[in-house]
Image (cartoon, rainbow, N blue to C red; front, top):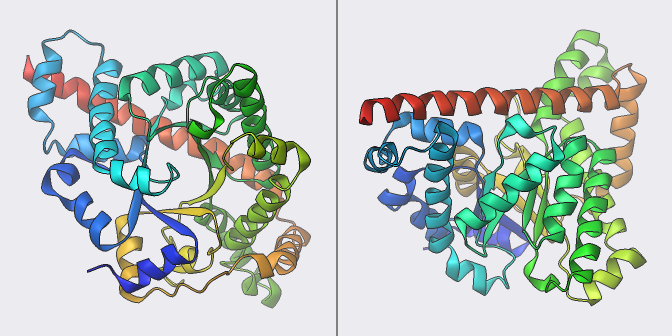
Amino acid sequence: MTNTRTAALSQAGVSIWLDDLSRERLDSGSLSELVGSLNVVGVTTNPTIFAGAIGAGQGYQERIRELAGEGLSVEDAAFALMSADVRDACDLLTDTFHVSNQQDGRVSLEVSPDIAHDSAATTAQAQQLWQQVARPNAMIKIPATEAGLDAIADSIAAGISVNVTLIFSLARYRQVINAYLSGLERARQAGHDLRTIHSVASFFVSRLDSAIDPRLSEIGTEEALSLRGKAGLANARLAYEVFEQTFSSERAQLLLAAGANVQRPLWASTGVKDPAYPDTLYVSGLVAAQVVNTMPEATLLAFADHGDAPNDTITAEYRESDQILNAVDALGIDYGQTTEQLEREAVQKFQASWHELLDKVRAALGEAH
């Protein structure tokens, strides 16, 4: 039986993707079960997720023994393990991919965070991973750093479907959409079928509240305290306004008329960090047509248990969202500085997870010899 709450969320226009993947989840049938019962139609991964999965070791031992005999570098071995999981998840979601007109049934694999500030290396690795997974419903995750913007445009131009990750600010989001449209224009010139190129823009939600709330508490005034837990939703809602405006532009409409797809906003970091807030805050508060919400399993299960899925909790909130961010700024909390810091910290966290993953693969390869 399909869960009525997740079914209602899907009906309202939200594609539910799971923010987790492991060999154990594939082999046990857990992912298949979530697809069947909780309307999961996609999967996202990142270095932290795979560091946990491969670190746990379940289901990877045999493949690691094979890789140990192939003489691969540690990084190549790590990507071989991750690509196999992504490929199998893509296969599991093939029906979803076709039924959704290729919008969903997507599984993302991220480039190494060590090259987040190197455009050429990111572009080259995106191409390599796209070929390695070799599934039309894969997406290659590229971080929305300054250097990442060129790599996004280059990858889209080459016909690769891209999940743009680590977007924190509205200004950077506008640059991401511009990179997508630029890539599509080049892809069209090169003769690619635009219908086959898809992209999502992963806008991180809860981390803005995690950065701003402590400062509001420190200020301590009635106004400051009343703003806690509101900046993340306000920022994401204004991102959706940018999405609506940009894809209504003449430039975008020309591409859409030629078969291109919109780059859907994806709400990431939707697990609630502060236990004082409802555990479905960043799901129920971000409902609109043509969005993706990628949830950790705990958030997905919480929503399935007691979530509320109204039809639209975004488009009527634009002006109030403006007021919230302006009020935060008026208290001396600089939006630009905060989002820049969040981007830096996010890249550093993924780099730390990536090196933890490489250490675990290195140790496993050593044991397998």
